[in-house]
Image (cartoon, rainbow, N blue to C red; front, side, top):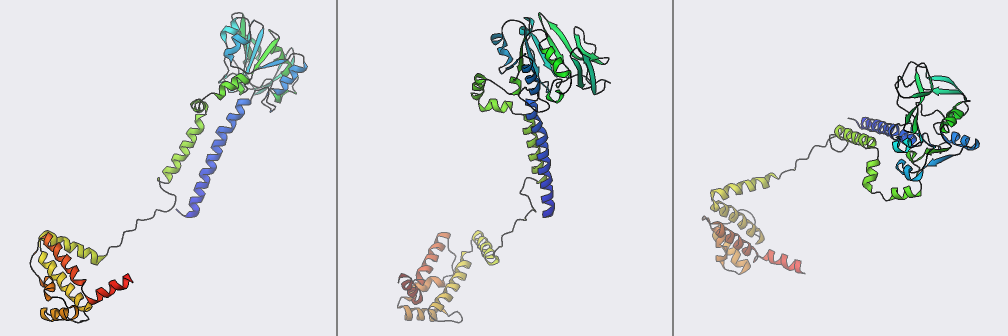
Amino acid sequence: MKKLDRRLVFGLIAVVALIALTLFVAPRSNRLTSGSTFNRSPDGYGAWYAYMQRQGKPVQRWRKTVSELERSIAGTGNTMIQIDPTQSRAYAQDDWIQRGNTWIIVGRNLPVTEAGFSTQHQSDQGAVKIETARRLQQAQGTTELLGDQFGSIVWEEEKGKGRVIYVGTPFIAANAYQDEPGNFPFFAQLATRYGQKVWVDEYLHGYRDQSEEAGVRTRNWGDYLMDTPLAVLFLQTIVVMLVLIWAKNRRFGQPQPLETPRTNDSQAYTEALAGVLYKAGRSEFVVDVVGREERLQIQRLLGIGGALLDRDALMSAWIEQTGRSASELEPLFSSQRLSEQDLRKWLTQVREIKQHLPNVTFSKNARRS
């Protein structure tokens, strides 16, 4: 693959991963505050909350878990509203309801009918605009509060001395509908239908009081990971695996062939020959070849070049220039088979002979100076 093509492919992978992460992560963070009375966006309920304040029917914000209701909100005639477009976190407290309280769940997953998506419905508070084709059909034990021939949009179900009210659309009184004549008044009448104390659950939208925040801070990293959306981690894992598979688990770029180390033919031949001679036990061949080469080097150091001298001529030159005994050169003329230990001694004797040569002595003195 060419360099330009690789950059194009990696660029496309990065763009796709960025788009996918945006689609998975951004909507998730928006959904958390959708339906919150703190939210001023079109899907929030901030305008309806302000409307209730102006009407003299203040709504209180609940910022604790619903399990705290039994201890915090005692008695009857109370109303709890949960606005949950995700339809995954809202649930009712049956004991609290059966004692004589009302629970309103805004947003239910209903089947799609043949009703039009945008419809107007008359109520005692005015025309209510509904934008959904989902309806509740043929539900026993329920009372319809708003609906049409296709089914119920708002209905209630009695539980003990209390009741649960369901709203099919999660945006019946959202900020986007504040200009409609009947939406805000209808939902206000629904909230105060059976009592004057109205609460809106903001805990499920991420808002907590100080005591709850302190409890959140004591959570460990394991609790945090459990609350982290696994879809993002799963998507990132898939992207990384695709990149590794495409790259065949190596660095990006053209594969580089391994360089074969160059061999020294002379060294390889010498080592191979030495191995053969060692296995064959032919030490006399080594003594003969090495002895001849050492005699040539001694001749050069004595200043005698040319062809290899015979025994007597080399010994005479040795005595004349070094003043040492001719018997010291005897090992160089040996051609007998030696054991491995004797061969090592022979090589040591050859090295000692060369230490007495004039040129060798000069070289040592020059290095000392």
